[in-house]
Length: 169
Image (tube, rainbow, N blue to C red; front, side, top):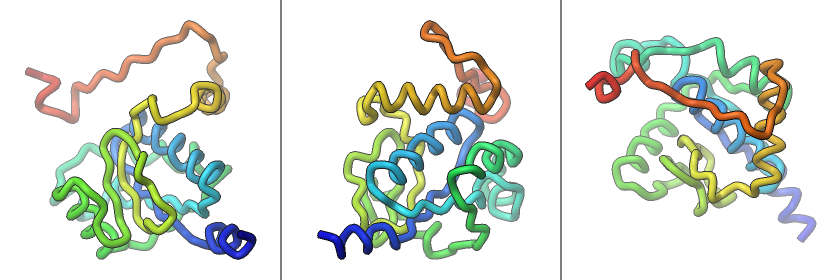
């Protein structure tokens, strides 16, 4: 058992960030979950939220690069290395809708997240996965970070208007 715990602690999992502020906040919560409950050494890759050839020329995304560094810097380390095979595996995982080699792309949850996945990309916004008390504590962490007084009856609305066509129609 001790050997397995040490092995898990030494394993590095690279979580690719993507999307805007709302998505990045859920990715922060997912990274926290992996670190706290799965004993994973989570590294953060911000390739997909920074301006570069892929995001601006190929994907034509609107980029919000200033968000992640401040939110993640106290608890996580960034890895700025471009992982071509990791991104390729994540793309294949997305297309086939299941894990591929050492990578998993997930849109709504991460129930099947295992310790052997090296590359992760997803949005992790299925609240059924998280324990309510733990999730509320993470929301309070985020509120404190943004200097917002935590409040039990607060609601947040994520409105998409400038970076997606479907929201405009």
